[in-house]
Length: 396
Image (cartoon, rainbow, N blue to C red):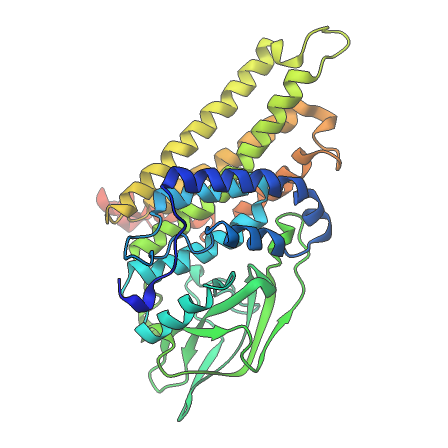
């Protein structure tokens, strides 16, 4: 990788990086309830992550050694999510886009230099903004209403984006827009958070993942330099997908909700080991029925670990997994929801108390179903693929 696209990576091996993430996650768990209650930005968490060298971990080291592979990033995101999942979701979006600088050829050198340089002194988080109030998600095939107008000084971008995960913590926006040319092109226009004409409209007030602060961001005639555009191509061709970045996105998003399920497992294990019903005179965990349910949790989590690692290794080896990353994320998410549901069943009234972390884990894990592509789209794509292979494509 060129010198313009290098960032310092913490000393140590991947196991050391994971140990740092585990230690931080334990600390983040102590304030997770407060962040959920207030919806405040997890700024202190990101300061701690940056101090430990984990914010820029997936970039390239100053000595030219590659940053963390997806198989390592996946485990780190799951650990952080075990402690505080909103922090993990923001970090996962950052990792996906930061890794694309190292892995692909889509970033102009000057732009990569500017983005990476901004992360040396503190967290300079990146996220791609694609969903809009009117157009919805581009995963459904719709083009954005956000317009990029060509001018002598560069591009002028005007539009309204929703679900900007990270909100005011973001330093860079990758804004999906169409050009006003005779033959419109589609691309991601890179905009700094301090650019004139950019403002946040606070409206994020959800049941779960509250500290992501996924507010709306409005752009009014924002100037974007000529070369600060990614993947500019005819809009008629639709969005282009890089197989590696697609795998990173699916694996890391899945890892967030897998981490939530692991946190729920820890809580219910502790509950079952210490709670002794008066009629039983022994811990709840001594019952065969409870052991059966705890065993199911372990099986679901082990499957999630193996599935996520498998797709991550394929991506790290440069293999195009096709629709497999989306399929695996779908399975991991549904398994995670199942884990938390079982945990709630075991804990009973205790688990649904606002004073118990399980209630928060339940609200958070259900938010996984909102990420595009949703389960319906993943299953539909899987059906079309297998029908095409078997000659039954006329049926769809």
